[in-house]
Picture 1 (cartoon, one colour):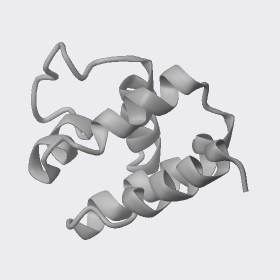
Picture 2 (tube, helix red, strand yellow):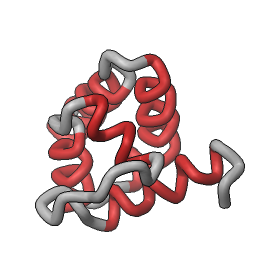
Picture 3 (spheres, helix red, strand yellow):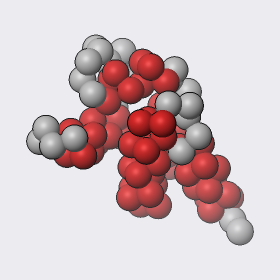
Picture 4 (cartoon, rainbow, N blue to C red):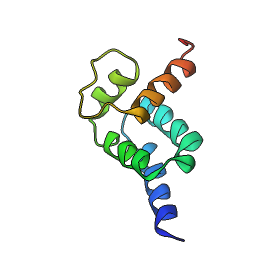
Length: 90
């Protein structure tokens, strides 16, 4: 197994072990669908997002909280769109 495969497995595991069940499902399903096709920069952004506290992250995905500039990026925007579609808001 190469380094990328190890990283993808680690990120996929972290995506479904967040702490809030709803976030585990959203982030885990997003990871299942998109993680394998991400570039290194996108993986770096995704990994950084996994460090955002659960309540804040969930509120950002649901557009219930403003997004801090330091975490805003294309992966987060894709995750917000994914969340909206999952919840029937898009």
